[in-house]
Length: 191
Image (cartoon, rainbow, N blue to C red; front, side, top):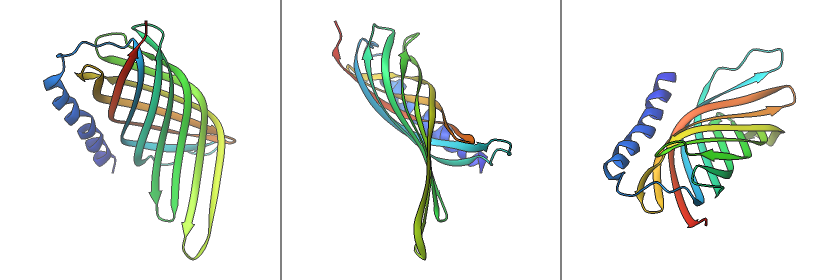
C-alpha cells in the first residue's frame, strides 16, 4: 500500500512539473501581487492518541485553497485551508486546517509556506441500516509546505508542492504528509 501511495505522489508531482518546465522561463517570476491558488494530490495520515500507539498510516486525498497579500517581492501574508480525507467502509475521516501565515519566495520559483490556526478532526459514520453518527473535535492547526512555481503565463504558475498538516484534539492529534500539484494566479500588482 505504501509503495502505491509513493508512486502516485511521485506521478502527481513529477508529470506536471516536467510538462511545465518546457514552457517555464518565458515569463519572469513576480510575486509582488495578490495571489490565489488551489491544489490537490495524495497523502498519508495517522492519528495518535495520548498514551496510546499511533495508528497505521492511511492513504487519502489532500486538497488546498489559498489567498495571499504581498508585503514585498519575497514575502506574502497568506490564508490557507487544507483538507485530508478518506472513506473506508462505513466511515469517512476528515482532517482540516485553516491557517494564517506567510509564503516566502527565497529564490526563482521556490516557495515555502507556513501557518498556524484552527484544526478540525472529524469522523462520520454512514450506514444505511442505522442512523448516521459523527464525531468532531477542534484544536490547533499547523500547515507547512515547500513547492515550486513554474511560471507558464504572465500571471499564472503551476507546480509541485509537498505538504505537512497537523490538527490537535483533546487527547491526541492527526497528521498528514503528501504531495500534489498547485495552480497559482498572481494579479493586482502591489505598488
